[in-house]
Image (cartoon, rainbow over all chains, first blue to last red; front, side, top):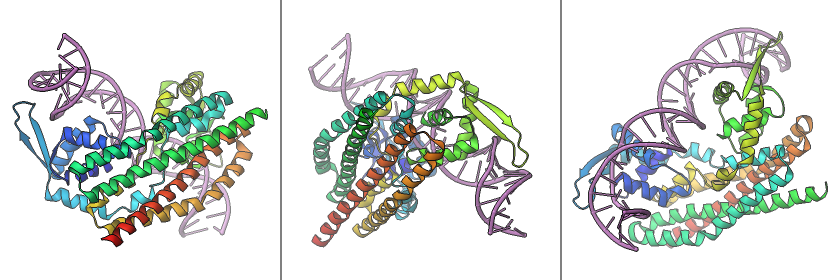
Length: 188
Length: 188
DNA sequence: TTAATCATGTAACACGTTACATGATTGC
DNA sequence: GCAATCATGTAACGTGTTACATGATTAA
């Protein structure tokens, strides 16, 4: 239920519209949890039905009208309850779900040259992501200074740091994988 | 569609029942793709309807009867087509989906002490997983010798190696995260 | 005038999870 | 006698993805 709890967590910093939540999500939580706009609107409807949120329609003259959501007491309690029971998520915290690795697993059904093309493409991806990291920290600082308190920023940075370490580990892996394959290629 | 293609890939080594596919999945692919038994049976039904597989009922006397699935030509073509178009999966190959990191992100809503409890529990999990890795390689070798050819084993090992590197990176991250928090704790 | 940003959704389908149901055989 | 392994599923629900629909305002 992480999408619901992500929304609760964001709304705990103050009321927001679905549109704003969507942008917040993509700016911060999308490092480790991706959600479509349409999914966010659907969840908001469901969460209001559950009594975790209430919405208020705000009329605007210059822009389209909007619907501002805020936490109810029930919603706050639910957030606290969730924060207090992390066991199941720690249990699965190391599990990976990767369609890319599925392809690596079955690369034996193709030629070694094709496998190398796959791995080299992944290496490029790793290098790209790593070189984009500086701007990530910049945007955390810029955004954080304005709208988020320091305590919250600290944990945001920790999650970004996870992404960074993850990317570097992936690069390390693919370098090793490529050189293993190239070695076995020249032996054959 | 990775579950379907995982099944195609496994059946490409030879016909299997849903029960055997389920065990294969859990033994090998579950490092990077988890699937429930019931999901596998549902996919098999759907894939047969699509014409990718055919099933044959085999009567057994000592054990319950079973239903053996094999690839059709259409299924083989689909597998080849999938292997030839990895672009989208490489694009998202570095993306993470982690309910645990969602909790880290929102750990600012609790006390620093609670955050440390969370991170220490994760560290334990990392250490556990890392110490379980030797047996992983052992079982790949044991299983691989019997039923899988050498070319396939190589890629299996690569995916397992990814898991290992990932675990070590996670440990590195959590050690750093804990010491950062402990530092800021003593400053406050 | 055209793209970008603001703003909210519906519908259909695909995929994942949980709980339940059934019943045979083998080894301790 | 009891647990483990063999073997196959259904039903309901929850979550994720894709495509589509609508329409206003602002900046280039």
